[in-house]
Amino acid sequence: MRPPSFTLFVNDPKLLKDNYRRYVERQFRENLGFEGTPIRFFWRGKAMRDLERSSANRATKV
Image 1 (spheres, rainbow, N blue to C red):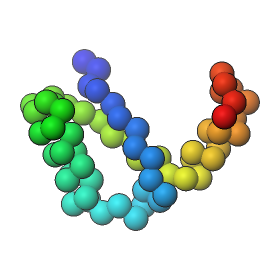
Image 2 (cartoon, helix red, strand yellow):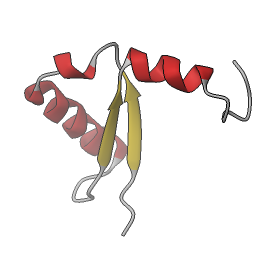
Image 3 (cartoon, rainbow, N blue to C red):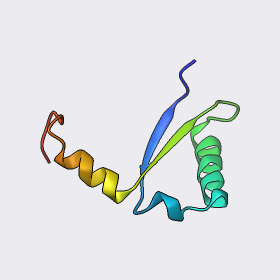
Image 4 (cartoon, rainbow, N blue to C red):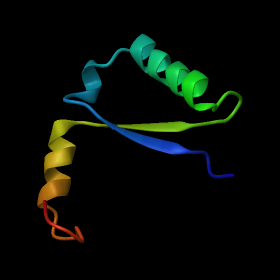
């Protein structure tokens, strides 16, 4: 129903090639026991991270 989701912060998600994304997903599955479980990844870039930090909706300021 609700697959586990992970947000991974990278400098620029557009630069990540599909084979590296598959590699990261395979590592999560093998090392964390998610074999056979659908999982979702959100690749956040630095620009998105900076926007979230400056957002007024954050509960705590960093």
